[in-house]
Image (cartoon, rainbow, N blue to C red; front, top):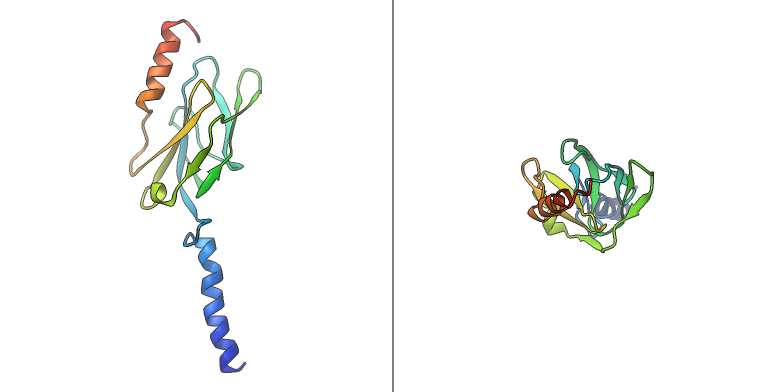
Length: 142
């Protein structure tokens, strides 16, 4: 192998691997992931973020999941009927939200909108979600 081929190989391999390890715009972060579902009328299951399952159970279950930067497709199922829910709003995850964080929590609201929070410690429910849940309970929707 001549020097030019070796030099090209030494440059090409690290650059091509950069996209795989999170340096490029299609970065993937492996982190603890969970979900919070605030609709008391059913439990959610099969919660997925871009076809990758994430933990659930109102933050009681976490899993290490591949979280990709960019536009997200969020789906989950209704435990009573099996109905598939898809997030009504567009969720975009930016690299700045994930960098240096250990946990990601997906929050699914009764109107089928979603948001994420990230943290260094186990995540908590959002104030918005707790208000939703309490309002629905006061109205005897459960």
